[in-house]
Image (cartoon, rainbow, N blue to C red; front, top):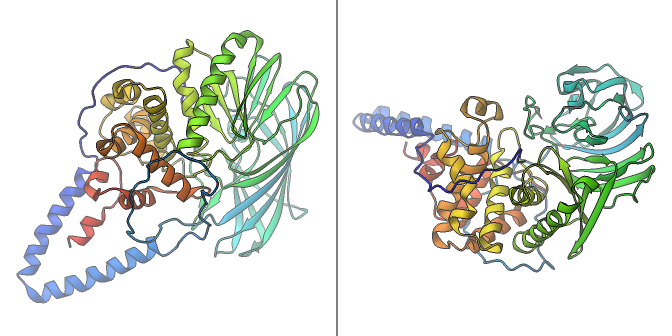
Length: 519
């Protein structure tokens, strides 16, 4: 997500102060202690025994669970990428999603301000733990946009607990491993006029995060506080069926692979294996399309900004074609760009792009939001605690498009992230979102710092950007439809490049292996 208008300043990159300097100092202290123990043999033997036991426990906790999800095949995908070298450095650190949901949603429009929603959610327990409760994100409650009428589990009316953006249901009997339950939630939905994602604006209506969204289960429900302005929810891949009834005069665009005809009042939408389902309702709509390989790119705008739609369409189509060829195949039949909302935001199969500023200032956000279809849409991560993985890799893809496709110089391609980087304070890129409030916001740490630190390695051998694109392609094909965290990314990068823990400790908050092994 990129909000607002961009200002590009051409400044050279400065050095970075190590964000984890305390960890390095701690390592030195441990080495000093080791010398003392070496002089006293009995104590040293005891120390080695205890340390060895600790390492066994440490690695059993973090490395024991391996992903059982199948690796994506790249057969039949024609790509012009440069192959990178890789080496085996151990097992994957990915923990499979222990929860799964399929959604059947019914949306009925009563007025231009209010909807009736019936959400039927089939919840499956794929973890090794029996559940006595279910947890959902219910973000409309946070902005006073919803009133729940009834909650049922397998047809039985249930008590529920609402707090800010959380909906928790305590079960009468456990949902056992491998079993399913059906949750039904009925509520009225009244989008406000001034929200970021769920709102009414000049006759249009944006429905984002508008239904109960099952939280991800990884050794417990992953439910962090809501953070305005960023994706702070963590959901898995699901199938959606959405039935709708609208008033006259609206054009619907959504995360579905194929949307209904213009001004269709009723219909059924379907999408498979996506993380959320977004709907946009617009009036006085102008739609222009362009086909890229097997995908139709559509720009949905208004008559007011009709003259700019061709430009937006060209940039969106060119960036989709580039990423499709260089990173990996876009798997859906359609990509929508809703043009004219106030913010630049990504959703599966659809993005929104602001029309503020001149066309040149809109170019970068268009490319960035399209690139999110690969990093966020098709490779997942915990956006609250590891937001740099989708924002950083998306911004790196954007800058590589400018460098490789648009033939811009390095200074031009990386101008925005250089400016942000030079304005930052030393701080890691993988902290919880709330910690960036006191450090000037997320942009410098989730977007700029990862791009420039990765480019130190990826661009050193090949400043053309082609090997960096090959690295992103390998990453994409390895982790499609899987959840990646910081530790797994480090393991993956070590497979491809000769990088050590001190390099990562400069910009990421983690416990480097070298601290343990120096004991």
